Image (cartoon, rainbow, N blue to C red):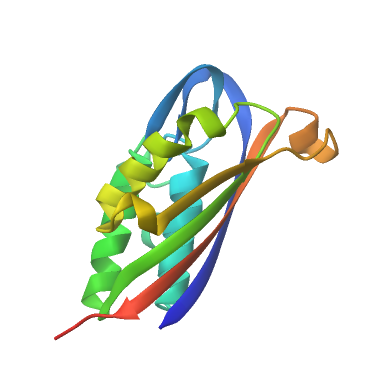
Length: 159
């Protein structure tokens, strides 16, 4: 077994749709980023790549390269899952914490778990999504953006 940790953060951008864990969240400003700004997908991507010692999201999908401009972050996650499988591992489970004052994560957590599970090749029961506020402290607490922490467990693939 191998464990990896991922982190991502983005500021809000009212000109973009809010996408977290592959779910479009209405009535919430989106996130600024080179791709679609899905900070949940980015943190999970870093967690699984890190667990397999395959670098980070920027090493595989460099920001600034036109190929990744506006990219669907769930597609990037799927590509990372393929890299992890090629390295001889499969995802066991992931645990995700989204830190923000808005949007409320609880109402969309089940849909996020389902979307992420499909891409990761696991069942929704292997994906945990939690929302936490920052008690109005710091930039997240001021509502300027959000941050995401993710932990992933990889298991050796059965040959």
